[in-house]
Image (cartoon, rainbow, N blue to C red; front, side, top):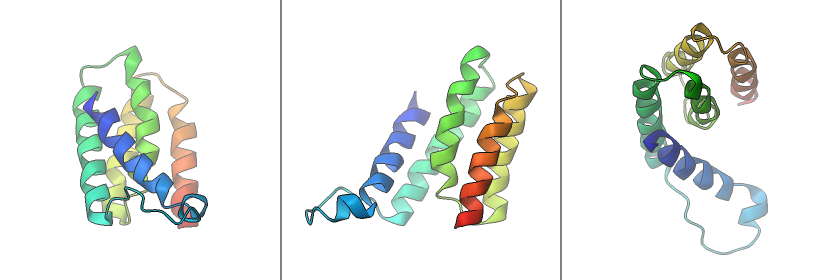
Length: 110
């Protein structure tokens, strides 16, 4: 559950950085990049630890990877996400390729 908690923190903060929210001209609870990075790292660590003991519920970690991936700038950091997705695929979730495609598209756009 902690993976989802940390991911939600990062996701909400990223959402508040959108121009639509910023147009409200009010103070929003946006985390610093460093804080988002740390929260995303915690989410990834909890997801990685949870994946070892997961079966059918393992696929629920996949959406957290997209949020985590948005905080990763370097190829070396991104390899953990790619490794995680390959482990999901090894567990029989062929849809993991779809998640990887979406994440790689987002990385290319940055």
